Amino acid sequence: QTAVLVKDVGAEFQEGILNPSENHTGYSTNFEKAINLGVYGADLGYSAIYEKANVSLKYLKTVSDLADDIGVSSVFSPEIMKRITSNIGNQDSLLGMVSTCYSSLNGFLQENDRVDVCALVMAGGWIESTYFVTQISAAMDSKELINRIGEQKNILGNLIKLIEPFYNDPEYTEFVNELYDVEA
Image (cartoon, rainbow, N blue to C red; front, side, top):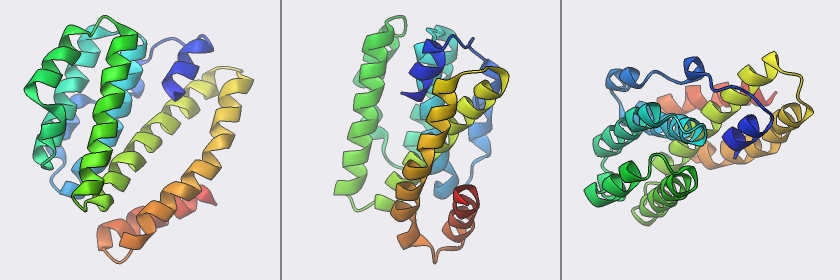
């Protein structure tokens, strides 16, 4: 939704604000991989909205690799990946399929008592999409983008509530503390 708004206000595509896909090999823990599955999902959505097929394919592969790494590859099955790949040029179909995959991922993780991973994926997507809008709004005078940034306070509060139950884990402690700083 944020990427659609960014495009709707007339912002040009900026590949430089994306998390470089080659960075995914540097994430060693499931914690890092889960957050970046959300980050790269936002990057995939952003590039798809701008109909950047080559960029979208690169991020689709990255999302698939990270999903494999954290044990949720069934959500991105070969047949789903083939359907997504064949619809790379069709923005509406592609966004619908990616959205469906992330909804399936959410359901899979909750059904398998992996709410912590689900929360991290959501947090990664939120962080990346918020990053997009702040970077782009700095270069544009758009009331819509500024309002979107302001709306994030409520979303961040809800996101923190999802992650706080895992606060005692050292990785989560640092992460939640950083989210508290952003919230303040």
